[in-house]
Length: 219
Image (tube, rainbow, N blue to C red; front, side, top):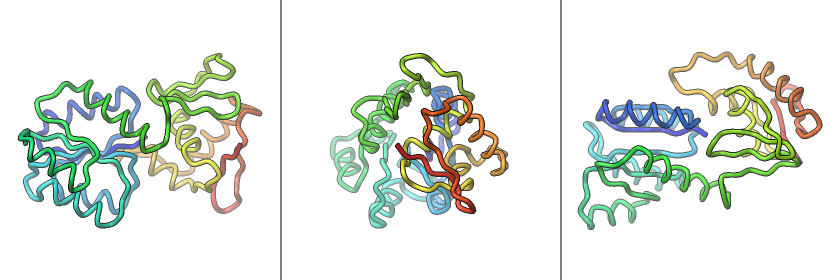
């Protein structure tokens, strides 16, 4: 899954980015609100982790703008504003969760996972598809309870396909969701990863190519 992180404290931001990547998330990190808002306009994310005390735009303004656009993107605020009325206001204007600084990085991971489960409608950290089980927390796959070895890219593509059953996804859609702004990735490489997934998962994967449009995964 792909997370947008907007935090101007570079030490905290880079530490959080590293931790999130270690547990399997794709991360775009920006240190100011303007760049973060632009990223929200041009890319698709599963979660926004947002500091409020940004140097150019107050984080609450970003929350308000998103909610005015009827965006259902989950938002986790991380902020040094720890007064009760400040936390209540942050939730009232549209944030889904509010975590006061200082915090443990593991708590951010736990809250991020909880918001993603709620937004995606998962009861637990599992996606069941035919005889496959995708664990979104450990980013691993089993077939009939037997582990399947997939590369990181293959896992991210499979997760995105599973999240979008019966929807045609273009190569560009897939690349946008499985890469960060720091990655160099040619959309044509998606074909290679799709081919590998088909070989490794065989009849478990009902994945069709829609000529000129992309791919569609169905039950």
